[in-house]
Length: 424
Image (cartoon, rainbow, N blue to C red; front, side, top):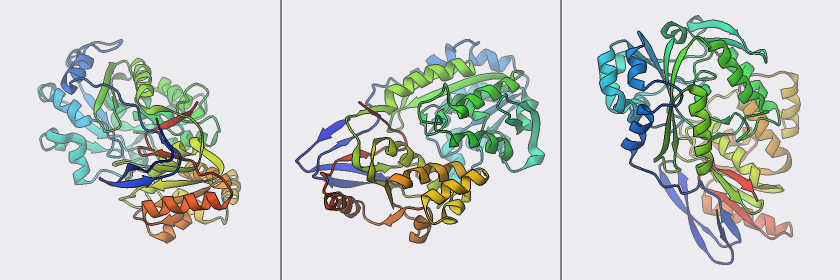
C-alpha cells in the first residue's frame, strides 16, 4: 500500500500487454500485491516435487500409476504450467501412458496460441495426448454421486478412467470461491455444465467472498464434492505467483494439505492493507485476466471492497475476446436497473447469473464506469458507463466528486483482479 496526497504522481495502469501512465494529483493510495522475495524458480519447483506434503515423491507416484491424467488450467490464469511440465518432461516420456486435460470449467477451449502458452516447450511433443474439457458435452460426463449440499457430481469420464490424477494449479484469492486452486481443478474444472451451475448458484450468498473458505457455501461445496471422488489417487502441484507472474512458492503432495499451505503463502502476496475507502476506485484487470468482461468482473469485485457508497468505480480492462459467456450480459440488459436485475435472479438461476448479481450489487449503491475495447452499447448493456481514455475518465470522476461537495480520495488497484484490499 502506498499513500500520497498533494503532489502529482504517475501510476502505470496495465491495458492489455501495455501500460498507460495515470497522473494523479488528489489524495490517494495505491493498493497492490505485496512485494515478496523469490528464490530461483528451478530450485523452488524441485524442492516441492522432491518433498511433497503427505505423499510419496512425484517420481514414485508416476512409477506406481498405470495410467495418468494431468489436469491443467486454461489460459485465463497465469499458472506456470509450462515450467512445471518441463521439469516433468523426462518422467512423462518414460511413463508412456500419460494424457493431459485442459480443465476449462465452463470456459471455451484454448486457441493454438493459448495451447502453446499453457504447455510451452512440450506442446509439439505431447499434443496428440492433450484433450480439452467441454462442460456442455453431456456424453463425456459420468455421474459419481451427490455432495451434501445437493450438487450432483457429473465429471469428465477421463478422470475416473485414469484414477491417477496430477493437478497443476495456482492459488490466489477468488471473488466468490475464497481462493482458486486445489479442488477447483475438479469442480468446476472438469465438471459438467449442470454441476457447475449447481455449485455456482451458491455464489449468490453474501458469505461467498474473497478469502473466505470456512462458511463460504461455494468453497465448502467444492471440498464436500471431493468426498465423492475419494477413490481417486491425486498428486497436487500448487503454485503461488507474484503480481508480475514470478514464481513465489510451489507446494506439492496431498490435494488438501498442499492447498492449505499455498493459501497461506497467497495471503502474503495478494492481501494488502488499505487505510480507508475511496469515493473513487480505479481497478484494472491485468493480462491475461483481461481476456473478456466475464473474467474482468473479478477486478470490480475486489475494487468494491474499497469503495464508498455513492462513489465511482472505474474498471480498466481490454476485454480482448469480448464479453465471454453472455448469459450474465443477457440478464443485465433485460432489466432497466440494477435493482430489477436482482429481482429477476430471485425468479430463477442460470450459470452466469452470479456475475450479473455481483455487478448489480455494486450498481445499486455506486456508479460503474469502464474503459475497454468493447463496443459502447455492450458496456451499457452491462450497466456500466463506457469511457475511452484512462486519464480523462479519472479526471472526470474527480470533478464529479467535487460537484457533490466532497473531497476526492482515490484508491487505485493496478492489479485489481489479484489484489484484495483489507481495510485497516
